[in-house]
Length: 136
Image (cartoon, rainbow, N blue to C red; front, side, top):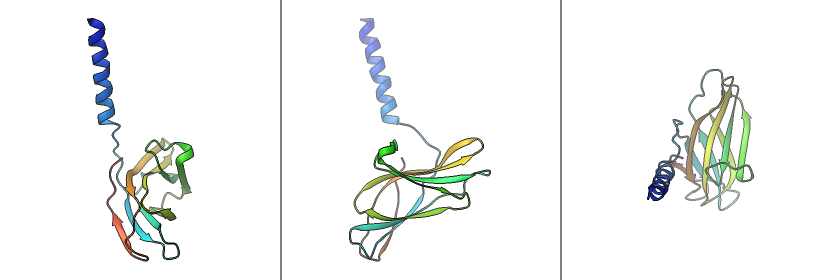
């Protein structure tokens, strides 16, 4: 009988951890998308993020197909200077859900300053669209 209760407790705790997931105090980036006039079905996406903490040495923008940012499915852009607060990525296929994060490096180590999820989109060639990303 005790074994059943233990099993149920482990399963219950596991479900709570999975449903709640990790929390982050990172902000969301501002994302603006525009269709690339030279290539149909391709978006040009600009990310903007908050000012990094003092002492930041560099920043990186990571884009991934999966939220865990596994190396084979992640595209990293950087190192970027700490004063840079935006970055434009050209030639992203339209209709793809991507996860992003902006990491900064300081003496104390790495810190995520912005992260979230969005779907690439554009209305018409040359048209701009601002996207409200969802939290990661």
